[in-house]
Length: 95
Image 1 (spheres, rainbow, N blue to C red):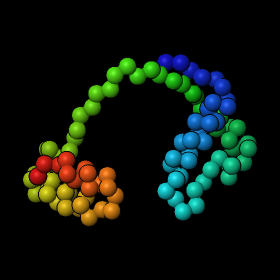
Image 2 (image 1 turned 60 degrees about the vertical axis):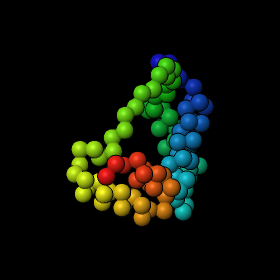
Image 3 (image 1 turned 135 degrees about the vertical axis):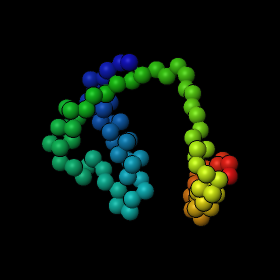
Image 4 (image 1 turned 30 degrees about the horizontal axis):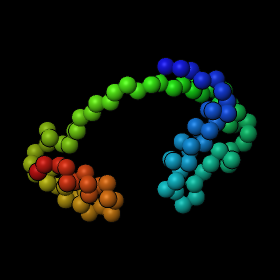
């Protein structure tokens, strides 16, 4: 882990995070909407760091512990969503 004390680096990451979290809103908020004092205070309080990821492992948790009726209901409701990711998730759940 490397700690980063570069305010410009931290600001660019904070701006990117804000853009990604606000992207779906009708009127997305940005750091430019905040007072410079607010942003400067936030940057003083935040700690930047980088880590090297050497490996990732994951497990799917897709309601296996639930009853078949619960899983069927979940698949049905996810299938009603417009989101392609919701439908893809529904396809992974074994009823």
